[in-house]
Amino acid sequence: MKPFYEDKHCAVQSFEAGNMEFPEHLHDHVEVLLVLEGRIGVRIMEQSRELGAGDCAVIFPQQIHSYRTPRESRVRLFIFHGFLAGMYLRSLQKCVPSCPFLAAGELPEDGLLALDRLYALSSTGGEEEGRLCSAWVQVLFAVAWPVLLPVKRQQSGNMELTCQLIQYVMEHFQEPLTLDILARELHVNKYYISNLFSNRLGSNFRQYLNRIRLEYAMQLMQSSKAPLTDVWAEAGFNSQRSFNRTFSDIMGMSPGQYRKAVSGSTGASGSSIPFSEREESGRTIQGKGCTGCPETETGCKKKGEL
Image 1 (spheres, rainbow, N blue to C red):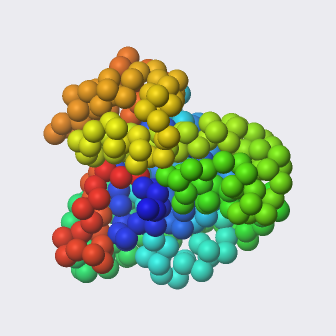
Image 2 (image 1 turned 90 degrees about the vertical axis):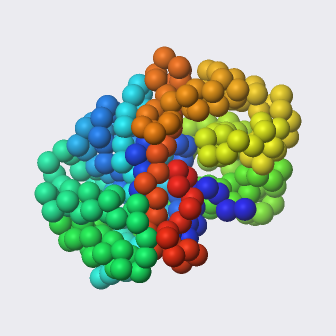
């Protein structure tokens, strides 16, 4: 199974997310984050910044990025295929922004209008809406390009290996996974891999793997009524005990408490879990939907995924 935040079939997805937390990951899509309220820490490759209301971040394909909410935040997130960018597609593949962060006011009004239209269009589907999305994506890049100042990609050997590590974990986190397996599959010494996790990602391998599995489990708990025994097994944990311990350590509450908090705070309004309930990391996602999905005439049904 592909990870829940990668390899999407839909052309455009947009979400409003409260108190978002997400560990280092990468994918083949463009990702744009607009902060609506509060503050959120964003790391893109080796650049990081805490963003406030009105600020924006633009992530090109295959850039490692992560999100951390210091207390409370609400953001609007856009994920779309590079082919929607038309004449900018080749540059998206060959370049990266000099600075991927845009302070409030740096994105011209036409860029904000493009994001508003993409958000509105993502709740609909069909070929015509897909063409409109492509037009608005190109408007977005037309006005943002001079601010982003893209430069040719230059990647060190260590960063390239880090990308390979993350990609492999993204694709295999639901399976038994160890440093020995990573070393064998990527033909690299396991102690060297361990140092890369610590130095590049700020956590050891087991902590990172558990966080990825936990994020997937929380998405299952938000989007389905599957029993917790099915949730932890589907997410790759080897026992309910390890799942409960990991969940409590990271979220500050039990899986049952989290599910109750989510079900009680994501009704029609889609509001986030209050900070007092979520402790340090809980958050909810309200999906607007997808546009241009080739698998269905009414758009993708995978609403609320990240």
